[in-house]
Length: 581
Ligand code: SER
Image 1 (cartoon, protein in one colour):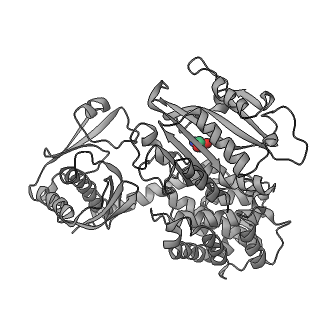
Image 2 (image 1 turned 180 degrees about the horizontal axis):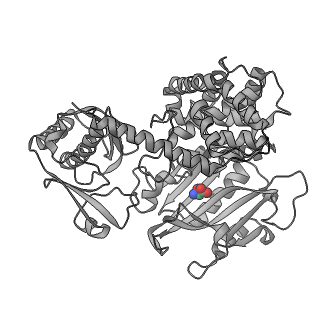
Image 3 (image 1 turned 30 degrees about the horizontal axis):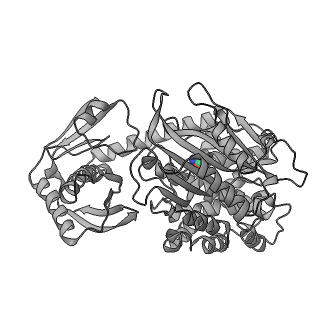
């Protein structure tokens, strides 16, 4: 059995409910492009809202950290990774949490205690020194010399500037063939962190004030790739069972050995895996020039460029062979990988074809530029982007290999100029009578508020929005509800929305202080971070929501509303897809 299954089995035996991984593109949090930690989708529950699956949860969560993107190519960094996590939402606290971690590592994974060390929180004026955790570790058999007390920078964990946070205890493993030192030195990087147990009992607000959360929670996270390489005793993650067979496929395709070609092979393996996960995510991300789509494009294009470096024939189905090896590994764990594998393969192939057309010429052009042996100015970098589809990061990477620098600021300025020009052009088109995308999207925004209000009438006033997504074709709306909607409930909801459209209700906007808005009963998304002054949109007297807009002026503009689909989204959350006809 692999570590992922052992982990889930262990925590389920300890009374935890396994929850599915949330999508890698967060549905309710526009402040981040991707989920970066296992706890991120659980923030509302750490803040106090009851979780439909109970107080003890465990999972493996899809995560993606862009901060590590440039580092990929060495032995330990990845963009995508899985995080094993277990949570107590106001249930157990330090003693059980530490005991479970210790037991799992030493009894289930059979890691000798002699190779372990921990750090605990040294304390500040506000949060006392965590002697309790230290005593628990000692009682389990960890010698005092292996317990280090560290400060805010090391042993206090927060999801971001604001939100749930708390002191933590981190577990380290001696990853070296040399003898294990008696004393734990956190500065010695042969001690690698394998698990983080956060005792989330505080909330930090915009002003940095720390207050107690309604309940004391535990949030733990263990990086899957790291623990697997520890167990398997490899010093290069890409030699572990997670990657070995993927690297073997790349060796076969390129007819080159891993040794001597590690960097490119690691980049290809990592970036194709991440691209498979992004493109099979329910958010339906496609390569583009903005947000998640841009990251996806960058990853695929960088993988292609490294494939070319290995002399792989770009026009062959190399990317498909690698992606299929990856898909086979994950499809039993993630239904979206199984269901959307063809989408992922198509995304890779289409982007390859697109970039393949210009890559060769672009590389030749780059060679010419590099011959000048001068740093690359913004105009040239923009030319490589605009004409040959070279993401700026790719140009920087190519330049760095030649020990040249790129004027990134100059590139950004060119980019801005270009965007402004195209914006003016599209405004011109709009004025000329072509309907802009935003018109239908604006209608869907307003319809979303009507649907939210209708569901409250039909299902109950505890029903709230959990997420929403709008395209030109449809609206998607997630809400908490413990059952599949009956045909009657769906009909009633649809009828109510259409009634309000018929009633020609006026849509009005007021700006007010956030507190005032909440006191006036405005609906707010639980975990959204709102500024101090917010816009509140009211529709007749049936809906009042904090929202950035834009909205139509009158509901009569919306046309006919129709529910197309109602399905489960995640535990206790349903999803409606609807259209305006
Ligand atoms: N949130 C903590 C982390 O990401 C523990 O899960 O390290």
